[in-house]
Length: 282
Picture 1 (spheres, rainbow, N blue to C red):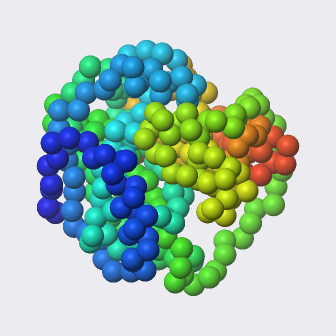
Picture 2 (cartoon, rainbow, N blue to C red):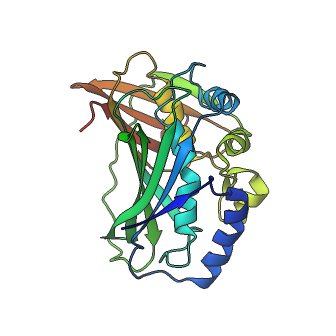
C-alpha cells in the first residue's frame, strides 16, 4: 500500500466543493484505491477540545473522549474519498456504522500520528459497502482505531432486511436536541454538510428538516457512560433513522455481560436512531 505523508491536515472547506463536483461526474463501481494518508506531529488544541466536550456533553478534562480523534482523522477520510481514483462520490455515501477501539486513554499534550485508508469493499442488498479505517499512533504504537462503514446505494440485489417490530426500552434519560446542534457540531468538527445546518438546505437533499450528525449522536451517548468505562474499550454503533432537528430523544442503557448495550430513539414515537454496544476491546 502506498502511504502518502501529509504535512498538514487537509482543508475541509476546499474538499467539500470537490465532493459536490465528484458526485456529478462519477457513477460508482470499480476497485478501492490502494492508498493511505499519514499525518505526523499532531497535537490537540485545548480550546478545540473544550468546545467539542461542551457540544457533545463530556466533562472538561485532559483525557480525550474516544470519539474525539475521529474529528482529527475525518479530513484525511474526506481527502481519500474525493481523490480522482475513488470509485464512489462522497455526496450520497451514507455513514451506517462506526466502531472505535481505544487501547488506552489518550491525553491532551500527546503527539500523535494519524493514518487513514479504505478497505473491505463488499456487496450490500442496497448497493456497496466499504470501510474507512483510521488509526492514531503514539510513540509508534497504535493506541486508537476507528472503522467507519459507508453504504453507497444502487446496484444491489434489492433485498430488504426484515424489520424488527418491538417497543423501545424504558428510557434511562430524555435529551432535548436543539435546532442548532448541527451548526454547533459542524463548527467544531468542520463537517458542514448542508443536511445538518438548516431546514432549507436540508430540504434540497430530501430531508424535511436538518438532521443531527451521526457522530454527534454517538458521542452524546458515550458521554453518558463517563466514569463507568475501563481504560481500554470498544464502542460499536449502527446508525438507524436520522434525528430531525429539533427533537427529543430517549436514551436507554442496559448491562450486558462485561459491557453495556444502549439505544437512542425518538422520545415520542420510539423510532430507532442508534443502537450500540460498549465493552472490552476485541
